Length: 638
Image (tube, rainbow, N blue to C red; front, side, top):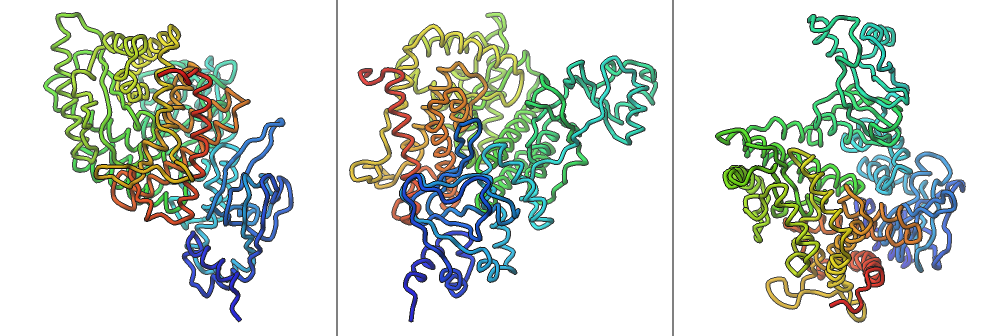
């Protein structure tokens, strides 16, 4: 007699990884042992420190919160919805649960006995790989990043180099140091005694101020440039490049390549202003082969032609696809692809400068705008950038501007060949409107802020999300200081930004139907960018500007920062951050699937579960827009 319940379980499991990798016969063996659990909102499935169950779980309907409590504050790590697997970590590590799982809403969960699952999948390496990576997708902050790193080491030896890239870097925890008063002879003796290749110079508070390597001794002492008794401060490399603990192998590799160094100083807060706690060396990093971030970045740095850069950037797309399929955390994916995009831009500018008849007449900075400026650019998009150059006398302005316009045209042409389309609105540094001196840019931003209108708000949504990719950072810092000083002079600009942020209502209409395009080539398609992502992007920008927070441009990071600043709204901001990541991942998947930007989605191609996931991501949009209406008094502002 057929088991109709088990068959329904099979039908469901067959639509999600890793179960779709199994035959129906195998799935039926698993399904007959599945326990169906019904949970009311707030019900607990397991608690932190509980002994692990003999099952792992997949959400059938509803949503499950995973969180931990610290100092009485509830910190949500993830919200799992239909098709998401969770509860794997304890089964792999044989440890108690590190998080508590509760129902975010009325939910149905399938409990799958690990013994039964393993008995039918033991020799399926694809399944084993998924079991390791699935729970790692929860690693949105350092709390779980360390756990994830240990799992990668212990359970995925030599099976997937991509996974190793996201292992937490194993740095030296007790670095050898010397004081600023030490002589090189004293430092060299320490290096010899401990058989190490570098020593970190620290101040009285153990903050790193410099580093000395074997190469320094060889090139500066052995050659006779300095005597052996010279102070370490005379030959040390300074300032040092720092990172905080918890960085991944991929992050470490990219920083070393970016700065052409072989050592990273690990400090308490990741800056030179805190105590040294470790050193990550090139020998600590597993050098990866094949299609990895490290290799791609090396290819980009060595490229001498646009054709080579295009090939390297296309490898980035392959890497993106691979990471999406492996369920790597979207925050890590964004970090990797953003660094690749920035590296491509830097190399294009370097090659363009070589084609110019002379060196730049003054210092300049190349600003990435929009999604690249926010470090959220995953798929190929059109170009959005600007250029700011150092002030010059009035009589030299036109000549100086023409030089940089010529440079910008070379850059935009190469970026177009690589795959980044020209901006249809011409928001590019090759446009004289967006290639200006520092003072001209300051005046431009002051006008936008103090005399806001429709055009000013539209342009602000692009230009307020800038990031210095190449050139003189001080120019950009000066511009940023002026912007924030001007923002203190008026509240009207916030109202205009707020009005823009709430102009797109909730993506759902009456009866929870998706709001689709009504005419044109995209009729009946859902615009995930304008209806779902942009409201979150606009809200995060407005709120972070109103808090006078500099240097936080990424949308999800902006919401995470807001959660720190506003504990009373922590849950809302964290849910917005999660929703943005989930929507970005969904858009990217659609773009990879259809070979486009993923902006417009044919809802008929989505499964019921995919539509449910999208709807859940829309919940925070309405809440954050209501918050903006109240905070900036927008109800009567037209």
